[in-house]
Amino acid sequence: MRSRAPAAACLFLAAYGAVVFFASPAFVAPDGSALGRRSAVLNGAAGTAVALLGAEAAMADAQGEPARALARWGPAILSLESSINSGDMKAVLKKENKFKLLNSYWRNSPLEFEKQTQLSEDLLEAAFEGKKDDVKKLYNQYVSNKAIQVIKSYPPGPTRHIINTATSIYGDMRSNGKTTGGLV
Image 1 (cartoon, one colour):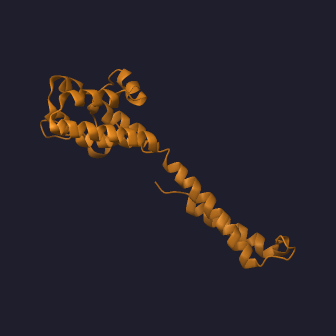
Image 2 (tube, one colour):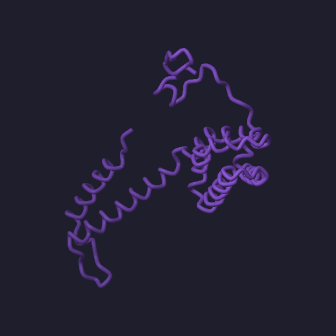
């Protein structure tokens, strides 16, 4: 998807340049002297750049990546509960990447991100060392986060005849090796 920001910036700069060209005496410096045309244009360009680039950075945080991370990787982490209770540390270690991916949910909140990352690292280290009681304690602390508790309370969603961005682009490989063309 193409951004409209560069086109809008060019249009704004052209209009601003025309105003500066035809109304240059209107720009007066604080000491009372008229600003030069170059100075006025540069000031306007700097203000435009700050406004447009600031809006683009704010928009990047609102694209749905955190919600996607929670919905995609949260259930995989929650499914570890039975493995942890039975003492299967290999299953916990296999989910290391899923912990890291789920931690990206909190990336816009540095304190929460650091807390959850530290918990997951301690949990994986305890699993590597075979400390089952420590793994249970750390896992319970990790999943006690409010966001994970919310997703834990949701009922499972439908799994058939769902088209989403991932399946429509990549298709869905079934056990028979055929692609369903985006239908799950």
